[in-house]
Length: 422
Figure 1 (cartoon, one colour):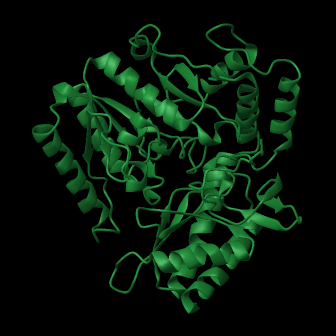
Figure 2 (cartoon, one colour; figure 1 turned 90 degrees about the horizontal axis):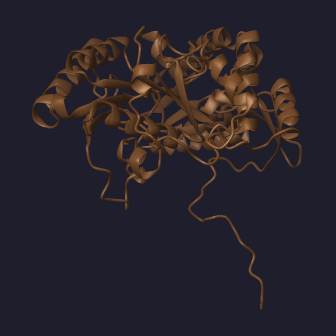
Figure 3 (tube, helix red, strand yellow; figure 1 turned 90 degrees about the vertical axis):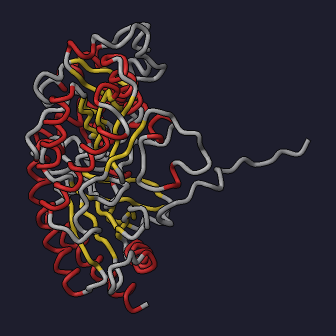
Protein backbone atom coordinates (compact mmCIF):
# COMPACT_ATOMS: atom_id res chain seq x y z
CA UNK A 1 0.00 0.00 0.00
CA UNK A 2 1.43 3.36 -1.01
CA UNK A 3 2.25 5.57 1.94
CA UNK A 4 1.07 9.17 1.95
CA UNK A 5 3.08 11.84 3.71
CA UNK A 6 1.09 13.70 6.33
CA UNK A 7 1.08 17.49 6.27
CA UNK A 8 -0.11 20.25 8.53
CA UNK A 9 -3.68 21.42 8.15
CA UNK A 10 -4.01 23.84 5.22
CA UNK A 11 -5.94 26.19 7.48
CA UNK A 12 -2.81 26.91 9.54
CA UNK A 13 -1.28 30.06 8.09
CA UNK A 14 2.06 31.50 9.22
CA UNK A 15 2.22 35.20 9.98
CA UNK A 16 5.85 35.29 8.78
CA UNK A 17 7.86 33.15 6.30
CA UNK A 18 10.48 32.16 8.89
CA UNK A 19 11.41 28.52 9.54
CA UNK A 20 12.88 28.92 13.00
CA UNK A 21 15.87 26.78 13.92
CA UNK A 22 16.82 28.32 17.26
CA UNK A 23 16.14 31.26 19.51
CA UNK A 24 18.26 33.37 21.82
CA UNK A 25 16.92 36.26 23.86
CA UNK A 26 14.94 38.59 21.59
CA UNK A 27 16.24 36.90 18.44
CA UNK A 28 15.15 34.00 16.27
CA UNK A 29 17.44 32.35 13.73
CA UNK A 30 16.33 30.47 10.64
CA UNK A 31 18.01 27.40 9.15
CA UNK A 32 20.39 29.64 7.19
CA UNK A 33 21.29 31.32 10.49
CA UNK A 34 19.71 34.62 9.47
CA UNK A 35 18.85 36.60 12.58
CA UNK A 36 15.41 38.13 13.16
CA UNK A 37 14.40 40.56 15.87
CA UNK A 38 11.40 38.77 17.35
CA UNK A 39 8.77 41.28 18.43
CA UNK A 40 6.08 38.59 18.53
CA UNK A 41 7.44 36.59 21.50
CA UNK A 42 5.28 33.66 20.43
CA UNK A 43 2.22 35.93 20.87
CA UNK A 44 3.46 37.22 24.20
CA UNK A 45 4.68 33.87 25.52
CA UNK A 46 8.48 34.04 25.67
CA UNK A 47 8.49 36.62 28.45
CA UNK A 48 12.10 35.95 29.48
CA UNK A 49 13.23 35.71 25.86
CA UNK A 50 14.04 32.62 23.87
CA UNK A 51 15.88 29.94 25.82
CA UNK A 52 16.80 31.98 28.88
CA UNK A 53 19.64 29.98 30.52
CA UNK A 54 17.87 29.76 33.88
CA UNK A 55 14.65 28.50 32.33
CA UNK A 56 16.54 26.01 30.17
CA UNK A 57 18.48 24.70 33.16
CA UNK A 58 15.35 24.33 35.29
CA UNK A 59 13.47 22.47 32.57
CA UNK A 60 16.41 20.20 31.74
CA UNK A 61 16.91 19.33 35.40
CA UNK A 62 13.22 18.53 35.82
CA UNK A 63 13.05 16.38 32.68
CA UNK A 64 15.70 14.16 34.22
CA UNK A 65 13.70 13.48 37.40
CA UNK A 66 9.97 13.64 36.72
CA UNK A 67 8.27 14.67 33.47
CA UNK A 68 4.65 14.01 34.31
CA UNK A 69 3.11 13.56 37.73
CA UNK A 70 -0.63 13.78 37.10
CA UNK A 71 -1.82 16.15 39.79
CA UNK A 72 -5.09 14.48 40.72
CA UNK A 73 -3.28 11.15 41.00
CA UNK A 74 -0.06 12.18 42.75
CA UNK A 75 1.41 15.51 43.80
CA UNK A 76 4.87 16.79 42.88
CA UNK A 77 7.13 19.37 44.46
CA UNK A 78 7.49 21.76 41.45
CA UNK A 79 3.75 22.44 41.48
CA UNK A 80 3.71 23.05 45.22
CA UNK A 81 6.69 25.39 44.97
CA UNK A 82 5.13 27.24 42.03
CA UNK A 83 1.88 27.74 43.93
CA UNK A 84 3.78 29.12 46.91
CA UNK A 85 5.77 31.41 44.61
CA UNK A 86 2.66 32.64 42.81
CA UNK A 87 1.29 33.66 46.17
CA UNK A 88 3.94 36.39 46.22
CA UNK A 89 2.64 38.03 43.03
CA UNK A 90 -1.08 37.23 42.90
CA UNK A 91 -3.55 39.94 43.93
CA UNK A 92 -4.22 40.07 47.65
CA UNK A 93 -6.62 37.36 48.80
CA UNK A 94 -6.51 35.34 45.58
CA UNK A 95 -4.65 32.49 47.22
CA UNK A 96 -6.21 29.34 45.73
CA UNK A 97 -4.90 28.21 42.35
CA UNK A 98 -6.09 25.71 39.74
CA UNK A 99 -3.79 24.79 36.82
CA UNK A 100 -4.51 23.78 33.25
CA UNK A 101 -2.58 24.08 29.97
CA UNK A 102 -3.97 26.85 27.78
CA UNK A 103 -5.67 30.19 28.07
CA UNK A 104 -8.90 28.77 26.67
CA UNK A 105 -9.01 26.06 29.31
CA UNK A 106 -8.39 28.56 32.07
CA UNK A 107 -11.13 30.84 30.75
CA UNK A 108 -13.60 27.98 30.73
CA UNK A 109 -12.51 26.96 34.23
CA UNK A 110 -13.21 30.50 35.43
CA UNK A 111 -16.69 30.46 33.89
CA UNK A 112 -17.45 27.07 35.43
CA UNK A 113 -16.36 28.35 38.84
CA UNK A 114 -18.36 31.57 38.51
CA UNK A 115 -21.54 29.74 37.54
CA UNK A 116 -21.21 27.11 40.26
CA UNK A 117 -20.30 29.62 42.96
CA UNK A 118 -23.14 32.04 42.22
CA UNK A 119 -25.84 29.69 40.99
CA UNK A 120 -26.33 32.12 38.10
CA UNK A 121 -25.95 31.27 34.44
CA UNK A 122 -25.09 34.40 32.44
CA UNK A 123 -21.70 35.90 31.64
CA UNK A 124 -21.18 39.44 30.35
CA UNK A 125 -18.20 39.77 28.00
CA UNK A 126 -17.06 42.90 26.21
CA UNK A 127 -16.98 43.69 22.51
CA UNK A 128 -13.58 43.09 20.93
CA UNK A 129 -12.44 40.67 23.63
CA UNK A 130 -10.55 37.49 22.83
CA UNK A 131 -10.81 34.65 25.33
CA UNK A 132 -10.00 31.57 23.25
CA UNK A 133 -11.06 29.24 20.47
CA UNK A 134 -12.80 26.40 22.29
CA UNK A 135 -16.59 26.28 22.41
CA UNK A 136 -17.02 28.04 25.74
CA UNK A 137 -14.17 30.52 25.36
CA UNK A 138 -15.15 31.17 21.75
CA UNK A 139 -18.65 32.07 22.87
CA UNK A 140 -17.12 34.84 24.98
CA UNK A 141 -14.97 36.10 22.09
CA UNK A 142 -15.87 38.91 19.70
CA UNK A 143 -12.46 40.08 18.44
CA UNK A 144 -13.32 38.78 14.97
CA UNK A 145 -15.87 36.50 13.33
CA UNK A 146 -13.22 33.94 12.38
CA UNK A 147 -13.39 32.58 15.94
CA UNK A 148 -17.17 32.09 15.83
CA UNK A 149 -18.02 31.57 12.15
CA UNK A 150 -19.34 28.16 11.15
CA UNK A 151 -19.36 26.98 14.75
CA UNK A 152 -22.81 27.83 16.06
CA UNK A 153 -24.92 27.56 17.97
CA UNK A 154 -22.55 28.99 20.53
CA UNK A 155 -22.64 28.36 24.29
CA UNK A 156 -25.75 30.14 25.63
CA UNK A 157 -25.82 32.56 28.51
CA UNK A 158 -23.38 35.12 27.06
CA UNK A 159 -24.19 38.80 26.59
CA UNK A 160 -21.87 41.39 25.06
CA UNK A 161 -21.45 44.96 26.22
CA UNK A 162 -19.43 47.73 24.50
CA UNK A 163 -15.74 48.20 25.29
CA UNK A 164 -14.71 51.86 25.67
CA UNK A 165 -12.95 52.45 22.34
CA UNK A 166 -11.78 56.02 21.90
CA UNK A 167 -10.03 56.00 18.51
CA UNK A 168 -12.70 54.12 16.55
CA UNK A 169 -15.48 56.45 17.71
CA UNK A 170 -13.42 59.62 17.84
CA UNK A 171 -14.27 60.14 21.49
CA UNK A 172 -12.30 61.29 24.47
CA UNK A 173 -11.53 58.65 27.06
CA UNK A 174 -14.11 60.13 29.42
CA UNK A 175 -16.79 60.01 26.70
CA UNK A 176 -15.95 56.41 25.81
CA UNK A 177 -16.06 55.28 29.45
CA UNK A 178 -19.34 57.10 30.08
CA UNK A 179 -20.91 55.46 27.01
CA UNK A 180 -19.66 51.95 27.82
CA UNK A 181 -20.81 52.03 31.45
CA UNK A 182 -24.18 53.45 30.47
CA UNK A 183 -24.64 50.65 27.93
CA UNK A 184 -23.63 48.05 30.51
CA UNK A 185 -26.28 49.39 32.88
CA UNK A 186 -28.80 49.20 30.03
CA UNK A 187 -27.77 45.60 29.33
CA UNK A 188 -28.43 44.67 32.94
CA UNK A 189 -31.91 46.20 32.61
CA UNK A 190 -32.81 44.67 29.26
CA UNK A 191 -30.86 41.49 28.50
CA UNK A 192 -29.38 39.85 31.59
CA UNK A 193 -30.77 40.61 35.01
CA UNK A 194 -28.12 41.05 37.71
CA UNK A 195 -29.83 38.17 39.53
CA UNK A 196 -29.02 35.96 36.51
CA UNK A 197 -25.50 37.32 35.90
CA UNK A 198 -22.63 35.28 37.31
CA UNK A 199 -19.68 37.35 36.10
CA UNK A 200 -18.17 40.04 33.96
CA UNK A 201 -15.08 38.90 32.03
CA UNK A 202 -12.64 41.40 30.54
CA UNK A 203 -9.08 41.81 29.24
CA UNK A 204 -7.22 44.80 30.76
CA UNK A 205 -5.96 45.44 27.22
CA UNK A 206 -7.84 44.05 24.24
CA UNK A 207 -5.41 41.64 22.58
CA UNK A 208 -6.67 40.23 19.30
CA UNK A 209 -9.25 43.01 19.38
CA UNK A 210 -6.67 45.67 18.56
CA UNK A 211 -4.35 46.37 21.53
CA UNK A 212 -6.73 48.81 23.17
CA UNK A 213 -6.16 49.46 26.91
CA UNK A 214 -9.21 49.54 29.17
CA UNK A 215 -9.29 52.95 30.87
CA UNK A 216 -8.85 52.67 34.66
CA UNK A 217 -12.19 54.42 35.17
CA UNK A 218 -13.93 51.69 33.19
CA UNK A 219 -12.41 48.88 35.25
CA UNK A 220 -13.32 50.80 38.39
CA UNK A 221 -16.88 51.06 37.08
CA UNK A 222 -17.02 47.30 36.50
CA UNK A 223 -15.75 46.64 40.02
CA UNK A 224 -18.37 48.96 41.51
CA UNK A 225 -21.22 47.33 39.56
CA UNK A 226 -19.97 43.84 40.36
CA UNK A 227 -19.94 44.68 44.06
CA UNK A 228 -23.38 46.30 43.91
CA UNK A 229 -25.04 43.36 42.18
CA UNK A 230 -23.10 40.42 43.64
CA UNK A 231 -21.52 39.71 40.26
CA UNK A 232 -18.00 38.27 40.05
CA UNK A 233 -15.30 40.13 38.13
CA UNK A 234 -13.06 37.85 36.05
CA UNK A 235 -9.93 39.52 34.68
CA UNK A 236 -8.37 37.70 31.74
CA UNK A 237 -4.63 38.34 32.12
CA UNK A 238 -3.60 35.65 29.61
CA UNK A 239 -1.68 38.15 27.48
CA UNK A 240 -1.34 41.12 29.84
CA UNK A 241 -0.03 39.29 32.91
CA UNK A 242 3.49 38.60 34.25
CA UNK A 243 4.84 42.08 33.57
CA UNK A 244 3.74 42.57 29.97
CA UNK A 245 2.12 45.99 30.55
CA UNK A 246 4.80 47.44 32.81
CA UNK A 247 2.96 46.31 35.93
CA UNK A 248 2.88 42.69 37.06
CA UNK A 249 -0.82 42.48 36.18
CA UNK A 250 -2.59 44.61 33.62
CA UNK A 251 -5.39 45.45 36.04
CA UNK A 252 -2.82 46.96 38.43
CA UNK A 253 -2.98 50.15 36.35
CA UNK A 254 -6.54 50.63 37.63
CA UNK A 255 -5.88 49.59 41.22
CA UNK A 256 -8.82 47.18 41.28
CA UNK A 257 -9.01 43.64 42.65
CA UNK A 258 -10.59 40.87 40.56
CA UNK A 259 -12.53 37.98 42.03
CA UNK A 260 -10.94 35.54 39.61
CA UNK A 261 -7.73 36.09 37.65
CA UNK A 262 -6.62 34.10 34.61
CA UNK A 263 -2.95 33.73 33.67
CA UNK A 264 -1.11 31.85 30.92
CA UNK A 265 1.20 32.90 28.02
CA UNK A 266 4.23 34.56 29.72
CA UNK A 267 3.94 32.45 32.87
CA UNK A 268 6.31 29.66 31.79
CA UNK A 269 8.43 31.18 28.98
CA UNK A 270 6.98 28.92 26.31
CA UNK A 271 5.93 25.80 28.19
CA UNK A 272 2.16 25.14 28.16
CA UNK A 273 0.81 26.28 31.51
CA UNK A 274 -2.18 28.32 32.60
CA UNK A 275 -4.06 28.89 35.82
CA UNK A 276 -6.92 30.61 37.52
CA UNK A 277 -6.72 32.03 41.01
CA UNK A 278 -9.48 33.01 43.43
CA UNK A 279 -9.98 33.42 47.13
CA UNK A 280 -10.46 30.40 49.36
CA UNK A 281 -14.15 31.01 49.98
CA UNK A 282 -14.93 31.40 46.29
CA UNK A 283 -12.75 28.52 45.07
CA UNK A 284 -14.29 26.19 47.66
CA UNK A 285 -17.65 26.68 45.95
CA UNK A 286 -16.46 24.78 42.88
CA UNK A 287 -18.36 21.51 42.73
CA UNK A 288 -16.45 18.29 43.51
CA UNK A 289 -14.84 16.85 40.41
CA UNK A 290 -15.26 20.03 38.40
CA UNK A 291 -11.53 20.78 38.33
CA UNK A 292 -8.95 18.46 36.83
CA UNK A 293 -7.18 17.52 33.61
CA UNK A 294 -4.57 15.07 32.38
CA UNK A 295 -1.72 17.48 31.70
CA UNK A 296 -2.56 20.40 33.98
CA UNK A 297 0.27 21.55 36.22
CA UNK A 298 2.87 19.50 34.34
CA UNK A 299 6.08 19.14 36.35
CA UNK A 300 8.40 20.46 33.62
CA UNK A 301 6.12 23.41 32.88
CA UNK A 302 5.91 24.16 36.61
CA UNK A 303 9.70 24.12 36.92
CA UNK A 304 9.97 26.46 33.93
CA UNK A 305 7.38 28.78 35.46
CA UNK A 306 9.29 28.92 38.72
CA UNK A 307 12.44 29.90 36.86
CA UNK A 308 10.46 32.44 34.83
CA UNK A 309 9.10 34.15 37.93
CA UNK A 310 12.59 34.24 39.44
CA UNK A 311 14.04 35.81 36.28
CA UNK A 312 11.24 38.36 36.10
CA UNK A 313 11.99 39.34 39.70
CA UNK A 314 15.80 39.16 39.67
CA UNK A 315 16.24 40.98 36.36
CA UNK A 316 13.59 43.62 37.15
CA UNK A 317 11.71 42.78 33.99
CA UNK A 318 8.47 44.46 35.05
CA UNK A 319 10.28 47.79 35.40
CA UNK A 320 12.12 47.09 32.16
CA UNK A 321 8.82 46.52 30.37
CA UNK A 322 7.60 49.91 31.57
CA UNK A 323 10.82 51.68 30.62
CA UNK A 324 11.35 50.04 27.25
CA UNK A 325 7.64 50.21 26.47
CA UNK A 326 7.70 53.98 26.91
CA UNK A 327 10.77 54.19 24.65
CA UNK A 328 9.12 51.98 22.04
CA UNK A 329 5.90 53.96 22.04
CA UNK A 330 7.81 57.24 21.75
CA UNK A 331 9.75 55.94 18.77
CA UNK A 332 6.64 54.55 17.07
CA UNK A 333 4.81 57.84 17.52
CA UNK A 334 7.64 59.62 15.74
CA UNK A 335 7.22 57.22 12.84
CA UNK A 336 3.45 57.80 12.88
CA UNK A 337 4.00 61.56 12.79
CA UNK A 338 5.99 61.07 9.59
CA UNK A 339 3.46 58.69 8.02
CA UNK A 340 -0.15 59.79 8.67
CA UNK A 341 -1.40 56.39 7.46
CA UNK A 342 -0.70 55.29 11.05
CA UNK A 343 -3.66 56.90 12.77
CA UNK A 344 -2.99 55.72 16.30
CA UNK A 345 -0.17 54.29 18.41
CA UNK A 346 -1.34 52.89 21.74
CA UNK A 347 -0.71 50.29 24.40
CA UNK A 348 0.72 49.63 27.83
CA UNK A 349 4.30 48.57 28.50
CA UNK A 350 5.62 46.17 25.89
CA UNK A 351 2.22 45.69 24.30
CA UNK A 352 1.94 48.33 21.59
CA UNK A 353 -0.28 48.58 18.52
CA UNK A 354 -0.01 50.70 15.37
CA UNK A 355 -3.39 51.25 13.71
CA UNK A 356 -3.43 51.98 9.98
CA UNK A 357 -6.27 54.12 8.62
CA UNK A 358 -7.13 55.94 5.41
CA UNK A 359 -7.47 59.71 5.11
CA UNK A 360 -11.17 59.49 5.94
CA UNK A 361 -10.56 57.28 9.00
CA UNK A 362 -11.46 53.87 7.55
CA UNK A 363 -9.31 50.82 8.38
CA UNK A 364 -6.37 50.47 5.97
CA UNK A 365 -5.72 46.75 6.03
CA UNK A 366 -3.76 46.73 2.77
CA UNK A 367 -1.06 49.13 3.96
CA UNK A 368 -0.85 47.42 7.35
CA UNK A 369 -0.34 44.08 5.59
CA UNK A 370 2.40 45.52 3.37
CA UNK A 371 4.17 47.08 6.37
CA UNK A 372 3.99 43.82 8.29
CA UNK A 373 5.50 41.91 5.37
CA UNK A 374 8.17 44.54 4.72
CA UNK A 375 9.22 44.41 8.37
CA UNK A 376 9.75 40.65 8.19
CA UNK A 377 11.82 41.06 5.02
CA UNK A 378 14.04 43.47 6.95
CA UNK A 379 14.43 41.11 9.90
CA UNK A 380 11.71 42.38 12.25
CA UNK A 381 8.96 39.89 13.10
CA UNK A 382 5.57 41.35 14.02
CA UNK A 383 1.90 40.34 14.15
CA UNK A 384 -1.36 41.96 13.13
CA UNK A 385 -4.61 42.15 15.07
CA UNK A 386 -7.94 43.92 15.18
CA UNK A 387 -11.13 42.83 13.41
CA UNK A 388 -9.89 44.41 10.16
CA UNK A 389 -6.29 43.20 10.55
CA UNK A 390 -5.15 46.82 10.27
CA UNK A 391 -3.30 46.99 13.61
CA UNK A 392 0.35 45.89 13.62
CA UNK A 393 1.32 44.89 17.13
CA UNK A 394 4.67 44.73 18.84
CA UNK A 395 5.18 42.28 21.75
CA UNK A 396 8.91 41.88 22.38
CA UNK A 397 10.21 39.69 25.21
CA UNK A 398 10.49 41.54 28.51
CA UNK A 399 14.30 41.27 28.34
CA UNK A 400 14.49 43.66 25.36
CA UNK A 401 16.95 46.53 25.80
CA UNK A 402 17.02 50.11 24.50
CA UNK A 403 19.38 49.30 21.62
CA UNK A 404 17.06 46.56 20.39
CA UNK A 405 14.02 48.83 20.75
CA UNK A 406 15.75 51.51 18.69
CA UNK A 407 16.73 48.95 16.06
CA UNK A 408 13.13 47.78 15.83
CA UNK A 409 11.84 51.34 15.44
CA UNK A 410 14.38 51.98 12.67
CA UNK A 411 13.39 48.80 10.82
CA UNK A 412 9.73 49.66 11.30
CA UNK A 413 10.24 53.12 9.82
CA UNK A 414 11.82 51.54 6.74
CA UNK A 415 8.98 49.03 6.49
CA UNK A 416 6.28 51.70 6.71
CA UNK A 417 8.06 53.83 4.09
CA UNK A 418 8.14 50.82 1.80
CA UNK A 419 4.47 50.04 2.45
CA UNK A 420 3.34 53.59 1.79
CA UNK A 421 5.34 53.92 -1.42
CA UNK A 422 4.33 50.45 -2.58
